[in-house]
Image (cartoon, rainbow, N blue to C red):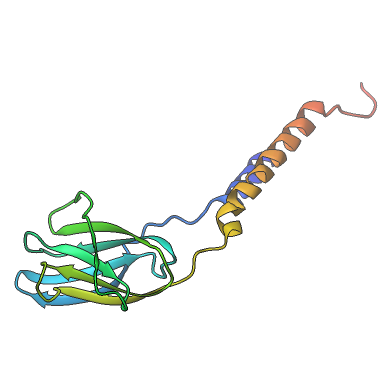
Length: 158
């Protein structure tokens, strides 16, 4: 019975695992094969989002991010790669709205290009909710332990 209660508490408060590789936002075939740009999360908000390029890129290729009304694009550095043909970058979106992502060589047309919509930042209570509820399973476990320790059988003894 106690094990079932513990498992139920754990199941209620364990978040979903984020094991997806992202959603494709652009794909193009060209010299060197097919290249695909993936984004996660699927619906980005103000804050951090990650981009992955699958496929070979020419040396010197970079990822640039810009709001449509801005002339200058922010160049984002690539993160250390895990495998050949995979490049990753982490972008910090500062404002909600439409953004343009371009992958390619400087001063040349982009090899991959996507327009995405960035939503507003998550409300602060959403980010604090796990911490606000973290005490609930601990309190339940302590109450169950206290009940088990202080339990004394009642009734006639033989």
